[in-house]
Image (cartoon, rainbow, N blue to C red; front, side, top):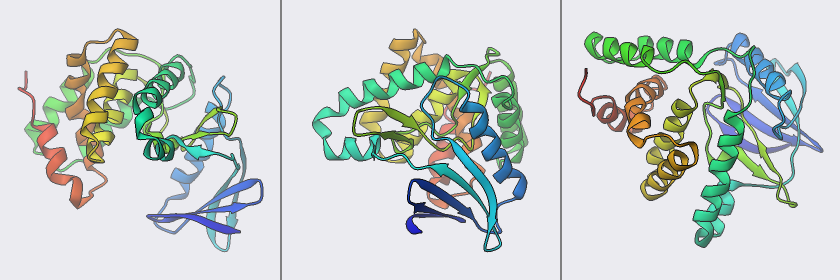
Amino acid sequence: MELIYTGVGKKVYRDGDRLVKSFDQSYSKANILNEALNQARVEETSLNIPKILGVQVIEGNWSLTWEYIEGETLEALMQKHPEKTDEYLEFFVDLQVQMSKEKVPLLGHLRDKMHAKISASSFPATVRYDLHVRLDGLPRHTKLCHGDFQPSNIIITPDGTPYIIDWAHATQGNGSADAARTYLLFKLHKQDEIAEKYLKLFCAKTDTAIQYVQRILPIVAASQSVKKKPEEAEFLAQWVNVCDWQ
């Protein structure tokens, strides 16, 4: 097998027409099996998603196996062809809008996941309370939410077909909350100009007020903070405290 990616606590290998993700002991079996279950459930939608082929223990580590999709990530294409940024962003948002129209009723709810992450964050009780109240005030939707929708998780095949990968954080819930996370990820990657273009485009295509998505950003920033990445801490704290609490 050929090692093609190393992340925190996991490695991804290519084995012919298969992709194998191997997790170390820092990952709980429950989370790994939940990722496999999420993947199997979203496969039943009309979206192009690599099929999961197996769940197994390899050399003592839990591993997931998918079909390998030949192509380049949308992130790589955007870096290679900066003159096409607007075109790629439109393609990206159209795909997200298409995704949000899907229903996967057996997935967990975004609201529940967000409440748990707010509770697990290190912000003061007063801030956590306000975030919980703000989250409860959001409309209750059941749209398919990816949870990490960014160009690096879109593979474009040679014939132009987009495949969405990495469904570990998939839930059903408010599509604008998923968009708020995408916006925040662009900001965390220091892609401020793309972040603003993305938000305007998403809101225009979904007839959503920009202020509505902005009101969700503190919730998303708090949930991101539980990853406890030191380089993100100050930035996320600013976003959590950016609004006037009501």
